[in-house]
Image (cartoon, rainbow, N blue to C red; front, top):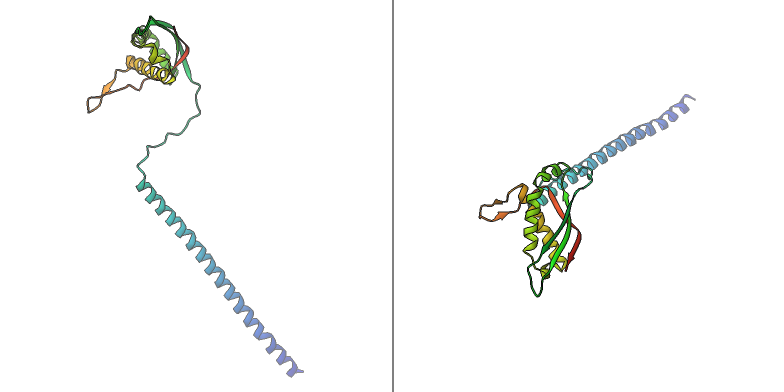
Length: 185
């Protein structure tokens, strides 16, 4: 029986060596796959970074975007009605308009109130320099609103000249001039 026991042990030994070999090969394959995956991820990341750099070189530099804060409620300053004679075309015409000013911050209201007589004067002079036909269209009204905004802001901050000698409209506290009533007769 001792002879029978030896062949059984010999039969068991080769499978043990082959199991070790299979485990070693499996571990090596797993390691190779992990290294290959890491290399692919790093290459994609570096190529993505290079694409961003190329894209940034092609695009003009952007201004740093301000972090958007929650939108504050707009501040409006209602003004009294203005009634002016327009430049006569065929016959006498007058303009009756009521305005509200949209301000960029609540403190601008306090800065603007002491200057309201001068603001009202400039608005009256500007309105009376218009013809009725200029103000009948939507574009005419929008242009008038922009002109009035610039006029009001210039009372608070005088316009500056650029290097070419052109006047730059001031960036004052008035964001927009809104018409609450607009009548031409």
